[in-house]
Image (cartoon, rainbow over all chains, first blue to last red; front, top):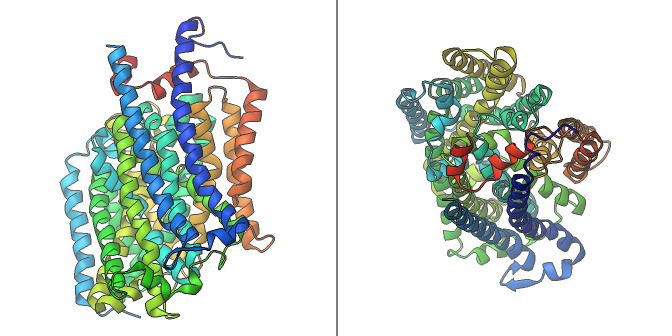
Length: 98
Length: 488
């Protein structure tokens, strides 16, 4: 393995790894939630079609509401939460390292 | 069919006139390579959100989704969902790191991570491949629209559309492209909004009443089976997050924070647009019956709702969609040729002036090539090329960018193997599908996991982690843009 340029400073290395892990935890949690929401739709349409084709409101079936409305709403809520949370973390980090 | 409509012709000429005026205005701001490629990194989040939306809402999106919903009903909405969903992954995993790295092209980012000219070359070729595959159907659409509108033959339409786009990228660079895309975003969104409002008016402003008229089209399965719908969604979502012309726009933001808010803004603009497009498609089915068409359902619906005048507005908006998307693609391709190939490989000592000159000449070359290929593509069904571009981006760029950004164990050989396997496997599966060897039209379900596995296994076996990986990780992940300056 090529020698790490900054491997001599173990503390720095640990800090970086913790920082990346913290950021990754937020991104991966929200990413998996959204991917599950979006990728489970074809699965539900195939294997739970009785439920998905059930009318909920007039001609709106569960699958139509899920596809044409719910995914979009979640696609706004998740990024907004992520952005506000990341801004907050950056402010806190900035204050800690003033 | 020729549209004999003076208003439509005036509107298209107005769009052309505005584009030229914006280009002349922006010319004074394009003096350095940073101005040309990334508009001096001074585009605000709101401006960038609108420009990215204009860039992303192509003719295929504007006309295609309504057409697919008209033809297949519910299954056409998969495209709305897939095109939208990719932006969330882009925000969560790539937007801030790419901006914090602060370069000009995607090859810069990959090369900065792995210090590899081989990788720079492969990413450059991938960028050109994806962008050209995307440009061809847009130019074909542009030629058709001008022919339809002005009665020009196809070749004249492609040449005029190609020349216009080339001029405004060459002269105005990213700044002119950005301002034009902002204007085109407003035109596209408004045209879709008015179409949907007029369509719903026919049903007492009730979406439910509209759905009553299209009862056979509101359930899944009219077009795609389970395997293909799953793979299509996966390909569109991950492909969006790996498209070079989308990714490079993040370099134009002043900061990582601005890059995140840009994505949130884009999601609100394109989200509302993609919610409206299926309504237009259902409206076309209900009001036109079988008298629509895959690419003409929206214009014909406009004609039904608002006569020749409104048809003209929608056709002019479709032309705006072609302009905005191709300009973004041309900038990505130019960056790959002039910056990655010339400045970083052929002549690293080139002066600032020389670099800018080569960038402009490259744009000119790309424009001429695009026009030639657009003319040669006449009569061919080129719609699948956009799908191919998404499949390649999803199967190669996205996995490499994601793992390179978040897993420090990724090595040059792992990234190279992933890129090559992703590009070759996705292209092979799509071509073998077209010649009828199997029915998997979107390869993402196979190629995306395969690329991730290849990158992981090869990197583990290789173990040659670049010496400054920690420094790179710190630069792209460190909170607070002010910390970046300390690092630099």
